[in-house]
Image 1 (cartoon, helix red, strand yellow):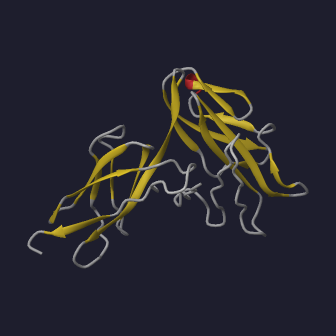
Image 2 (cartoon, rainbow, N blue to C red):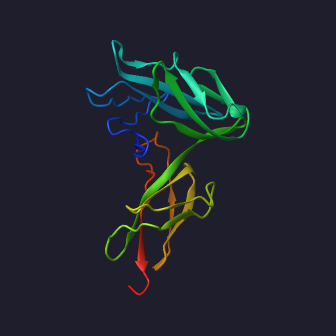
Length: 217
């Protein structure tokens, strides 16, 4: 299986742990000596979404599965809810963010899904990367990266001072085209597919870099 960390949302001492209910997956624990951390992992279960919650290095109890004891949270109750611990059941079509809280801890990573009571749930993830000058390899700030088609069509981001961009709500498993552009450079368009962070090994991670050629260069 493959597990990709969401570097912009996970603290440096925490590893994203994939714990799929009903699947033969073994969580990877943070390094010894880290503070207590609540980690959740969710996978589609037909139209529903199955989630687990694990508390690492809690006082006295150590590492414990707290799925049945935790409080499960949903960004928009209008779209559905947790009718049983760890199982989100949709009532309407839409995008929903799932999270969990247990005693003093709240999950450091949340999950987004596109849900529908009559369709299989689909994970929404992200795509990020670096835009560089093709000749000098220097990172390019102020470049625009835009999704041209597919579910996230029209979504865009501007690279920061390190040439980094990030676009959220990318539908996993769907092939899309993305274009990077900046004044003084010829645009570059790439075709890519972001796969789920929890799934078979060999899937595409959510990282897509661009190289732009300066006009006249």
